[in-house]
Image (cartoon, rainbow, N blue to C red):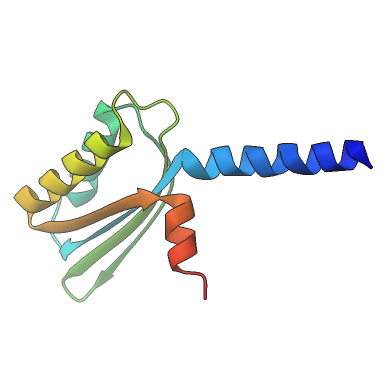
Length: 109
């Protein structure tokens, strides 16, 4: 019984660490060339690892959602978030980034 409880705790801990080390980035704006290159360039500069990307063009509206591993980034998450927001403002985009666990909690009903 103790072994099962310890295993369950270990699994829960590893899932918590995994969720804390991954972020969800949502990008919305008028479609034009270079949006993905700009956002991924910001991520590459801090050694973030893109795990998954989904993008859609609705009429002239560009939308992109990314799942990103930030385990090995060279700056604090708050700095990356501020940099992405600044890039978004300068590029006419709305960029929202948040930890995966917060994103999932917000979308649980």
